[in-house]
Length: 463
Image (tube, rainbow, N blue to C red; front, side, top):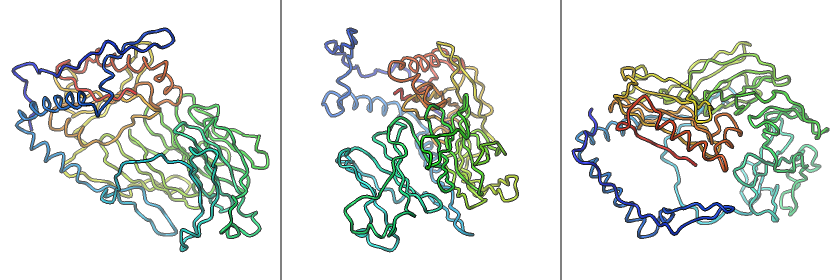
């Protein structure tokens, strides 16, 4: 399959008007913003500019004699089954197919305000649900509830936006004289106790033994840690797994009684460890390739759990891991197959490129094994760097087609602003430090020695 051939004439790009009259004054520093008019997508001028861009793109694509073949290839590769990690209940396993046929799409027409939390009993009408919590004085607060595995406590998580902070309240349902049923039809809330009543950190419960809880938190730990707190002594928080010097503690799940699966992001690669739930001591490390752990389904009462894993060259693998014999027994439960895709044709490498200030920026390089990184092949350079979101290895049909059939390779640059190394990495590329991520992407673009300018392609969202 071929690619677009070189054009005889240089492309005539649409000219974007510069409005020199738009100048912002930030604390005495004047910053020009000549293209602000493009921020209005509904203006006639913006629509005209976009239409000219579309026409230019189409004029080039029409000259591609393999366009229909590429379309057919992409369509075929996209048409493969998708599954989530199954849930184990008793001796049965319940898979979660993801066919994508029942997704409801729509446009939000109002703001979600005045959230309320209700408790629903299976087999009853929604009108009989019990109101657990509301806060009319704070209409933007968002509530999430969960019940502990022992069925004793109802946990209430309160957040106000996307920041990694929340409040945590709890209700001891076993102490309710008439149980939850006693609140049916009543106009008052459950008696919650405020464990954390400030938006200063994020807390997520992992497990509990009666009043002793294990939480994952970023309190004083931007890369997260695990702590114990006894509800009888709510001011005494004890570290179980201290914050790592470099790795981000992404999640933890209780399993097999007194164990837990701890999920770390280490140099943009996921690492799974089995640790002791009480002491946090290391027990085992599970074998994983370079990739991303998207889902772990586990319960403390079970010795078996499931892992959903994907990578640049792995559409999806569901692993089943059994801890019943002491040593983890990990095997493939289900593997997603993409017709016509052979992962052995490709290589994945990770390099660390020094930025302008010397900071080493991780970057993955993916391409066919017969592609030399000597400047003779096209390259797609991808960068994100925003919202504390990590660009971890993931399977992309479009990128695979680019590498397999168009002789290209692609690079994922983990520039600052993302969450690859925690909140500090995020802050180092945001607000007053925004220039860092811009420098990094430009530095990678200008100093890129794997390809040459005429073969460079870019996909960047620099937030």
